[in-house]
Length: 386
Ligand SMILES: *Cc1c(COP(=O)(O)O)cnc(C)c1O
Image (cartoon, rainbow, N blue to C red; front, side, top):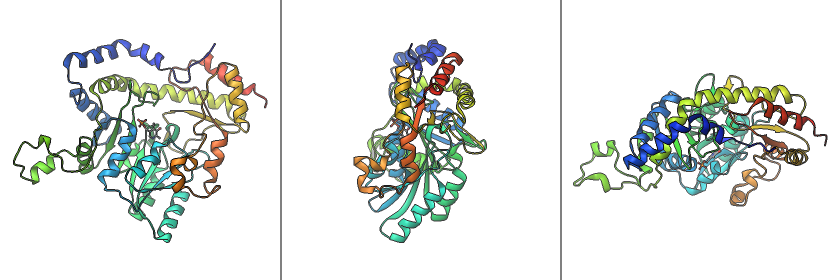
């Protein structure tokens, strides 16, 4: 019998009637683009994070690009980010003509290592070719990056901080959300993320009112903002005026309606994920090469449960043969992928990143993973002697 890696149907069964009703409501209203559900979702996302502003957009990649556009990133600018993450984190940087500079990770949490961040910034400053501008920290696999240390380094060097919380939306550190430290937190509503919709979607969360306004303008071709309207005299209806080069990156109203229903059970789902993670740790700690370490004071939303094994590929084949799906995130660090080669450091420079990519394996993880199924997964992992 085969298990799902992420069981979205189990969640659907829980709130099927509510979601069907919500989707139908949008279809009947006909307000498919920037309908009232979009504004309501933005309000609730900000409230969920205890932040003042949220702006939705078309996906988590645009959510990363929008603040870089708002800050006017350009060729010659450096943006520091991990290499052990989904490609989107780094790929938005060359969109703006800027240069990604890759930072190594902490071996226990897989998140950006503040010591490596400092070293990379100092190297760029010493070389004098690029101007350090921003840092993108990632909440990989669901747990918060080391924001207190990363934020202090950003302040010291005058850098903007983006929290790429596509996998970690809802995670906290000492009870605070990434948006408490970062200038802006970005997320993705891709279906497999902890808070996913029924297609593509994304959002930013920030306490910077000016930045929120600019992002909102940039997501619709640089439209006139309330501040623009108050400070300039337009001689026509400013609706079709464009003041800056932006993009078209809106969240569909239907997706907002789906997300409003999912948000109602999201906190409960985070608790359920925590229970599954604790059970994995109990069954596997000390019996495989590594189980995830969460930063002190951190609360992960467990987008993934990633273990390490010396014979990772052998273990994966053994799981597959026993009907248990698993995934390798990420088999090839970004700095070793073709698009990033112009920015790649020498082999061996990102030691922890390169080692992790050889050993990591993600096990099935979702809020509705039952105990019997989980025991089967744990026992199958323990039954591998390779
Ligand atoms: C999924 C993901 C993104 C991109 O989100 P999309 O909605 O697929 O564009 C960015 N960063 C990280 C870390 C992700 O996991």
